[in-house]
Length: 123
Image (tube, rainbow, N blue to C red):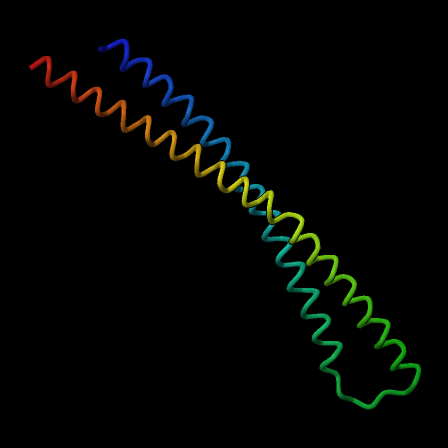
């Protein structure tokens, strides 16, 4: 019985290490996702600002404003594409981290249950 508890405890330690690794990966990925979302918001704000201008413009000023709005729209589209491209991998990393954390918690519960059962048998 003690040997089985030791084996389960070793498995729980390994699972906990894997869970910590996956959580660190998720945290790093989350930082990248937050930065991508922030870039997208900044691009959206720049595009909104270019359309909010209501002052009368000369022809050359209108061309410049149009060029700036086009650039902002392209950058916004690129930021949206980056987010769309990153989201499936982020969700997969989140699910993997949750799975590893759940596995570690389940093994911890098994170890505790086995220890309590062995203590009951002893007394």
